[in-house]
Length: 259
Image (cartoon, rainbow, N blue to C red; front, side):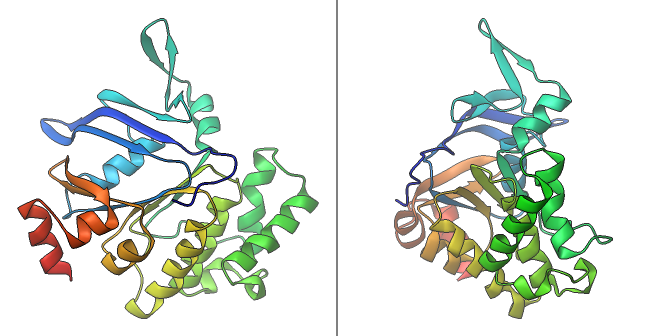
């Protein structure tokens, strides 16, 4: 396990269910993810992977159960033995601890790469402009794009845009980073450059949760692999256990299709 020194980023998911109308998108999910660990969530489309990811930073409200990061209830506060939903402002403040990288890059097209990276730390009063710029160059080094600081984001390739989106999420120094199929919108030849950045982060002590179909990446980088079907966890364990010795027929069937 690559543990971080400060041991933050522990994610605890307890009995979480989520309904969309009568459809049960998440069905009694429980997971413990250690600080600094890398978890890959696999499963066919419609299995609830993205919904679970969105619940971790309260982009999706859960109907049953709760999620905690480092003991804090996400989206709620506990008073007595009741959970009360936080106000939007408090939810946004909490979300600073959780970086989120979407399928489709979500950069501000009217800003340069550098401006994309300094905007949030300044807005959240984490850093002054000078320090935010310094940090931005460090993050550009992490993702290998220092030479693009002054480019407009819309002039970058998809792979470059996604690497900048990762840098932008890192700019708030989150304890947890969530990736929702970060390579699915990319041309095949650009997938590797984005996965390489995530591999680098995997050794940095930030807790990573990655929804992806990239089995090779899961095999190489994941501490835990979670396999979901129909909103349920069918199988979970180390990447070796789940990928090389799957117990469940649904897991075996899925892996035989994608390998």
